[in-house]
Length: 341
Image (tube, rainbow, N blue to C red; front, top):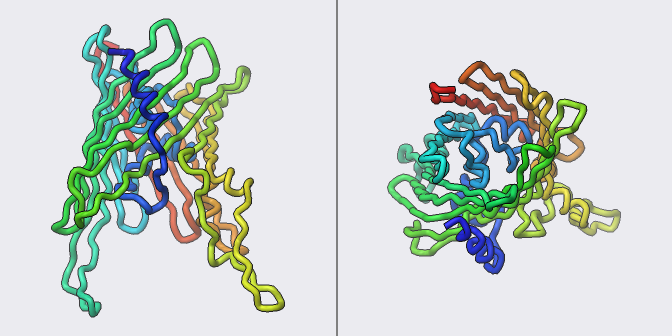
């Protein structure tokens, strides 16, 4: 059974990955992180093997050390939108290993209902939810781990509903004797089972490569993620960045090779990663580039936070800056339910 993951990997590589990003596919909430630790490190860390929330993003991180860990995550996102998740892991046996389950949701709040003439007719609600179960195995005599998630997705807009099935696949390299690790993840590969309007929409498939390195003599761990590898060009010229020359010609924003390459990069740093209290900071280049204002420093793309570990409890907090007019706070509580530890 363990070697079936090699077959899955081969299938993912030969599939044409012309997936879309940024509003060009349905269920975009699947790519919104809800863990405070992950958000404070830039929003897409893949190598946190000691975090019960990590398998939501990288199923290869599932391991026996997560047994009976549970986590509650909540984000006061933008406006009155709420984002959250619940994660839990249970070891079936030492031979079989551990399974991981999670629930992720996005509540868009109360929306105004109106007719074609703009007359208000009351209110309606919209929300998304995903149920996932994951499992990972270690390739014998190696430091490679292979894992996959199976997800059932439901989206509701007023009386309209949509369902979908998706899978994640991850590869993780980790050794307790080395100070570095790396992961390759394929997320949200699947299809709609029921659509909104008779037309099947694409799921937000994405490929990401991440790594982490802990300095030998300094209590600091670096994280680097290359995001959206399934698509090179991530952005279109911003109309607000247009320039008009003396002859009245309009010159569009030039997104050159370096500017586009940076949009794939997310970096993070964790100070005192193994201590009772640790500090974190991250930077998302794409968010910073796409939410900036002309001649105004918005500090978009920056995130930071901290974690406090108290016996069986771990509290994490993250502050994410999106724009001058918007930011969000994320709270996470992890509990170790194993009374034998």
